[in-house]
Image 1 (cartoon, rainbow, N blue to C red):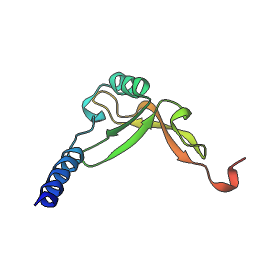
Image 2 (image 1 turned 45 degrees about the vertical axis):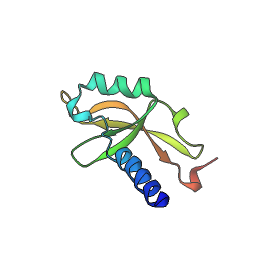
Image 3 (image 1 turned 180 degrees about the vertical axis):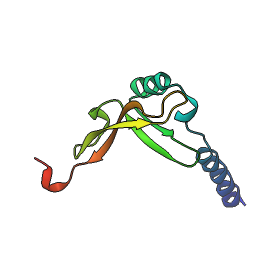
Length: 96
């Protein structure tokens, strides 16, 4: 009985975490979205009804083998808003 209760409790806790919503750039102004990334450092945001991505303010939020790529998203007032960067893996042949 205790095992069943523990399993139900654990399942309820993880289910709530999976259902949390992400900030959505399409409902924000360009300035608000860029500020959110700048202040948050690394933020996962929704970029549409079923899409999301991780954006960072600087390379400090990437791994050693990653580099920065400028990130542009659709916001409420700008279809090509620069909000920060994405971390992208550097191909092995280009690493120093």
